[in-house]
Image 1 (cartoon, rainbow, N blue to C red):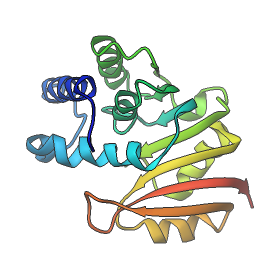
Image 2: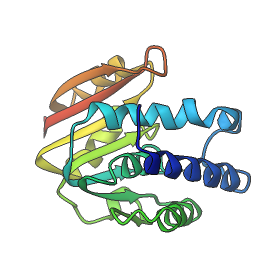
Image 3: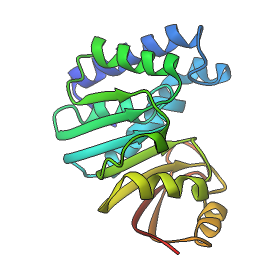
Image 4: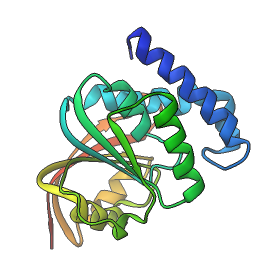
Length: 196
């Protein structure tokens, strides 16, 4: 993704912080540290490119090392989107707050609680990457997504099976975008969510 000089500088700063903190707390798999840019940053930037959102509220659940939440907040720093990152692990939340502060991401805040323990945020957009199977994610989406909201979920190679499993208890519209960085993976756009 072509990004501005300021965005590129922030992405590089984020990568440095992620590399530094990952030696102390497990933010990403150690086997992927040598390929942070392609495996993690570019992977998340494709979501920023696919989703045209430029205003409203965006919730990233189970943010961990800030993927994709912080990458989206960096890529869309000049938009009117306001990002909230939920991460229950206090050490990871501290990392996220450090990045938000050091990169001066005024469009982003961190909540250090369990997803279901946060009052419904009625948000316009929700994202998640490598958090849980789709059937488990649905309750989180139902809790926090506005009636007309969209969820953008980064899923691995089993995404089609996960959709089928989720349809047993939920009704929703789903559009799949093939991943440009991982063979067989997809980014799912989910909307019109209702139980049953």
